[in-house]
Length: 522
Image 1 (cartoon, rainbow, N blue to C red):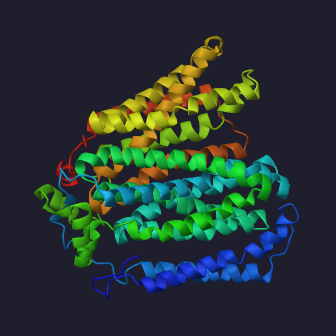
Image 2: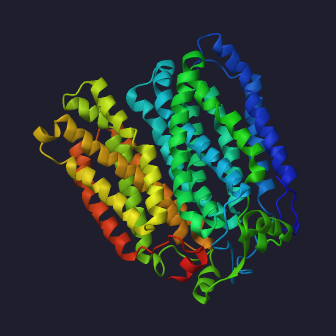
Image 3: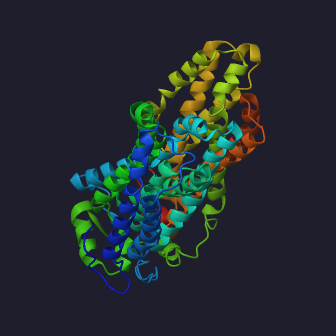
């Protein structure tokens, strides 16, 4: 973790933090005896009374989480104005080195681990329905709880990152993630819903904070492609890991094992936390000069004077709204794009297999069409990173919106034409390519466009918006409102068109520009 070298009055208390982590780890481990007993009975816990060890474990987690929070947070939050006139950033020509590679590897792993747990929802629901004997509508409460948690967590952790630092926010998100591994040991469905909401809260916060931290420590000429590639690789890797874990562990250990994986993976991330740096300006504000010197040595980050307008923008970051200056129109545009994307992903693409079967395709063919189109995800992210860093960030973002719109427009073709497999595959491919490219560049673009003091909450707001459509869709599913391909397409064309027009008109070019230069461009 590294010793704290600054003012002890305002600094974190790492011994308390690690004591909390130890209590949490012990609490999770105390759930294993009951799980071992359940394994001998077909991995079923439903109807069993919790034993004494499990109650003790929950108590230890209840003590450990607040203890870790108190230990990680500084006792007094310093004012943000101490170094408002200075931007800590690497020089434009700073090359990538081993330190950059290490932090990139750890943060990609963090995103993979973080994405993997929500991605297991689709794999655990069938087994959960069988064990608890619940209806399809009751089972829909589980993804609703998880997605609601991600919406809340995205903004809360982004705000926490702005107030107390990026690294602290990542560590506390990981702690909550480890704690919710016990959702795999809950004997009642109600407890699973509670834990699933908390799991979603921890998972929702990791992505915007990782983007925010990377934007602040990467050299300007490498920042663009790194943000897109790291975020996209982490997301795709998480889904691939979830499917691989389901294939390996679920047949033998049941659906509960998929959630218990949050414990070893989260502990592994904590063990690698020493390679996660803090945002340089937070170190400066806390007087942690030795760590700042280490950042200069490892990442080439040095004090660089801000332009006058950027200094004014950074002087009162805690109170600065997200809709002032050039952000007055950009923030609503990014939020609108994120909302529209969430409806495409959690509505149209989620229910697409059912819609295709209603059109007369058999289940195998429907799944094959979607699987073939999904193979384009990784090449799409690589191309998005290339265009974002070599061509134009704002034009790439607008282009991904237009690609998604082209897919939506194709969904409105006459049924007789859309029924032809080549046409249908082309339409789905456009939707998959457009939506994957859009989410790959949307959050990096948000992280680059806002001043340091509001960067976390701004990126968190956009991230929360990208999950909100899932909450609405799940609420609709509970009352029997299942979206159709044509219905969603017709409803989303206008919001996407408005978002594309607003981003094209008010978006700022970030490719190759330093953050201090972007902040000055208000």
